[in-house]
Image (cartoon, rainbow, N blue to C red):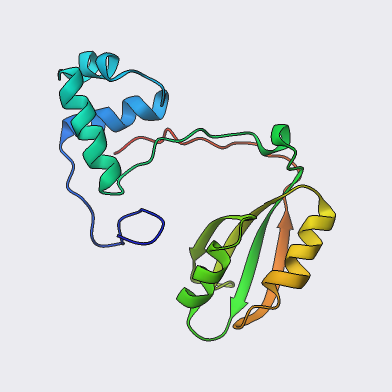
Length: 160
C-alpha cells in the first residue's frame, strides 16, 4: 500500500461480485445505509459493514464528501505539468505534502508529473508556483493549465 492509502500498482486486492456491487452502491450515494446496501446486494447490514471496512482498510476505496471548491472560497484550480530531473518519486512526495496540491500522478510523455492544485485566487497560485513548486529540487520546468470551468467530474464509473 502506498502513502495515500491506495494499493500499490500490481498489488490489487481481489474483489468478488458482491464487493463490486457494494462499491457501486456507494459510488451512487456514499451516504447510503448499510441496511439499504445489504438489501441491494443480498447481505445483512453487519456483513456489508464488515466488507466496507475491509475495502477501506485495504485501500480499495474511500468514502468521502466531494465538494465544489468554488463554494468553499477556492476560485482558482489548475493542473501543473512538471518536467523533472532525478527521482520523480521523491519529487512527487514533496508535492503531495503541500496543502494546496490535491492530486499528484507520475506520467510518461511531455511531463514527468502532473499536480492538480486548488487555490483561493491567482495570487495564491502565483505564490505557490514561484515560492514553493519551482523551488523544489528536481523541478526543471512547469507548465500551468488554469481551469476556466469544470465541465464534468464524476466518480461513479463502476468497477468493471
